[in-house]
Image (cartoon, rainbow, N blue to C red; front, top):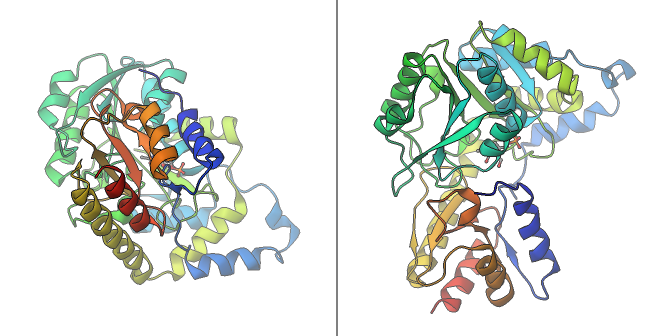
Length: 366
Ligand SMILES: Cc1ncc(COP(=O)(O)O)c(C=O)c1O
């Protein structure tokens, strides 16, 4: 299996070079607005004193860490502000692997491809556990795969690419398995504000020294370019993670943290609900058209993605390129996410033209 992250870029570039109009549904980049208060804070920032243009504390602005800690019911000491969920996952996985309790990383299949990629650069070995058709993970299958060699179990809910939201029982069982095998559960919850099912459960609900929760404002505030995320570590694991963060990054961006802090304080639930409603409408339009195209698909319970399978049209890179040229719709090949969904194509609902894309697919596969 290849985990070349540039595959995303390759498909996006291919779509851009195409000789026709293409609806881009490749990557998870929101097309909706950030909170108004975030824009206000960014404007304000330009006129702050010059000391505000210098290094922030490495682990993040104290006020932001305190705000997150209060909302998540943890101690601010446990919170590290990172360069997005991407760095938070890297720090969490590195911290788990450096405990020297084995080098195996349990991942799901399908998988968000950055996890296997990070495993490789950290010197770990991947072990995949298949999810079911709906993307649900059976804790018994994870237990069967776990051993003395297991350093870390990485899960993501709401899930990219399947749209699954794991029920509370699954998360609780995964924390138990991590404890049983002296491993670490890393729960990537970057799509938590896009739970469309009401079933989302955070791993923070289950107190344990064996779980790390990662998150970011990239998706929840539609600011993937600002690079502000966080990881919540158990007190026993946090110090080394802070050192690694400092040695790799020094710190993450100060204006970004300032803007997020303001937006957190000033944004009401309406903003997040409006974004969920937008997604719900897009899911409906898109899946209606997939029905018209006689495609098989999973209706997402959360996140931004719909995986679809078209009869006789496996989701290879070649077919995805053909779909760009011949139908004018760009998705991600299922083969990018592991072995189990090679027949499928993932479409990200982050364009106001999801309806156009759906109509084109329906016409193309008619
Ligand atoms: C599951 C998952 N985790 C992490 C990330 C990266 O998030 P960030 O941009 O905050 O680094 C993404 C982005 O698509 C994602 O889908």
